[in-house]
Amino acid sequence: MSETSPKLRAELEDIPTYRPGRAAASGGRVAYKLSSNENPYPPLPGVLESVVAAAASFNRYPDMACAGLMDELSERFGVPLAHLATGTGSVGVAQQLLQATSGPGDEVIYAWRSFEAYPIITRISGATAVPVPLTVGEEHDLDAMADAVTARTRLIFVCNPNNPTGTAVRRDALERFLDRVPADVLVVLDEAYREFVRDREVPDGVEVYRSRPNVCVLRTFSKAYGLAGLRVGFAVAHEPVAAALRKTAVPFGVSAPAQAAAIASLRAEDELLGRVGNLVGERTRVVDELRSQGWTVPGTHANFVWLRLGERTAAFADACEQAGVVVRPFPGEGVRITIGENEANDILLKTAEQFHRIL
Ligand code: PMP
Image (tube, rainbow, N blue to C red; front, top):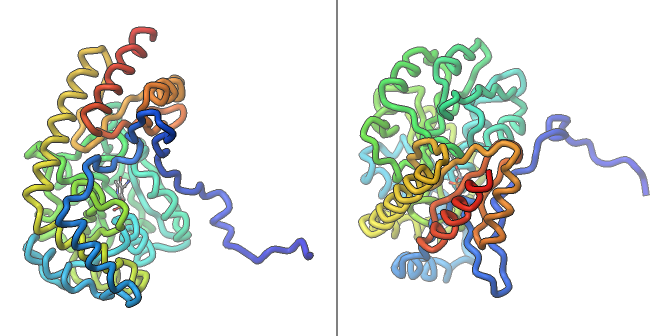
């Protein structure tokens, strides 16, 4: 056999592979997965039924245009059909945005630490990643991000709320930032956790985009709507951007069961958002309790909390796992903990209390 392997793009060499949150242990022990910001509630019966019904014809390709879902989204958000594009999760849509805007020689700005897919999909596109450190308060440093814009900048991600810190950008700060960004640079407001926001000062990107042709909003059915395993996300953007997204989409990327589930979820929105309300209540309980234990917890607007543990990150993650909850460690930096079932949150709080006592 020859030693020569097919030529691969040099950019791929040092790109890390996306690391999913670890699964909860199986084998009789109670274990809860708080590592992937998923929704802990099982599918609603009506949503499940729609998926089962759609699965009956999976010998056929799905509707590539996602027409039924697009109609529902257009109505629900009050945006024209031409301003919508769907994809395989919002991470799929984010990758389509990079393919549509950026290549070798171009620059992509994002806060760091933020969603771990940003550096990966940026580098896959061949563009140069320009990470801008978060402030000491774990927030986007929008002034520094605007300062980082050059003639090569093509796209800027603003993750609002930010994964993994949970912090959010407020309306005034965002508008000031957008005023500074050149009109030919695309600003992507990644609002994967929008439904968990309760602070009125945190703007709804769909309102922001209306008067700003260079703003694109990303939303997903994976978190609040509980469809992570079905892979449906979408973008709201002005026509040239939305049209480019349809060109860069993988054909038939959103399956018929996924389309059916997303439509059924929009129709069952009251019930699903009620569940989100319960999770927000649990979030308040977890944050308050952690703070009263003595932890520094950044205010979170999403379905997770962030503890900056530095060198003690791995030890904390191990202690959680021993206790029966799997969290998401970022070695040397901190731990992201998804708000889960009440019992899971109880275990987490108990473990955190014991851990803090021995600090
Ligand atoms: N954006 C952010 C900020 C996220 O945290 C995630 C999921 N971890 C995504 C996008 C992607 O979610 P999905 O592809 O499931 O829509």
